[in-house]
Image 1 (cartoon, rainbow, N blue to C red):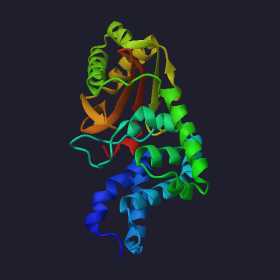
Image 2: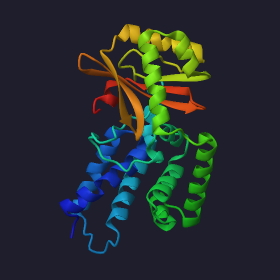
Image 3: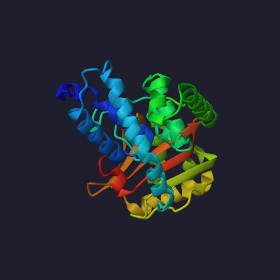
Image 4: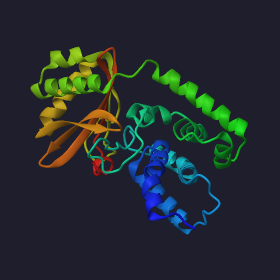
Length: 283
């Protein structure tokens, strides 16, 4: 017997969640979801004990096969590449299992891992799959998969460092950043930004955006004010992306960009702006 529609709707978020965490792209993850659905609809699943685990494994295997080609596309990408943001919260169009592993900062750290490390970490630490099943996806041994996950976990811990701020702290920092940028208050922006803050903009060559990261609190503050003056957004509103507060700028009903930030000791150390229309059209 193949998967029923009811069963599929129940487990679809996990299928999407696995693919999105591995690929960092909503569009690619949706393609994986369609592939998994077609396979599940045609498969004889009478002997499958844990349907969710089976579906997540198929999603991971399909995503794993796509990872190398996805990385090749990113090498030829115009300007900095950032993950495709995912709308979460009560109005989310694409439900997903939301935790720290889907945060924007975590997806960027995941980009530094090898494809096998990513698969081992996501399947074990997020979806609690045993290493013998992960080994079947990776074509290695249970011990090798365990070692990959451990190594990935260590690299992530080293990259992330301290405890992330609360949603309330992040929202407060974003609101203050928005108010200062719209008011053209350079002094206030410099106060909000860490002296070594970095600004990264992903325009993908489709819209005007900085082709290289901008470093330094004062330089980032100056740029933030200039962009607001040039783009003249009608509104900049607080939304939720990847389980965290973010800003969305609109003009004439069109979404111009979305911003996510990282904080250290209450100051903004990184601003990541996604403006590529192909990456934010679904928001």
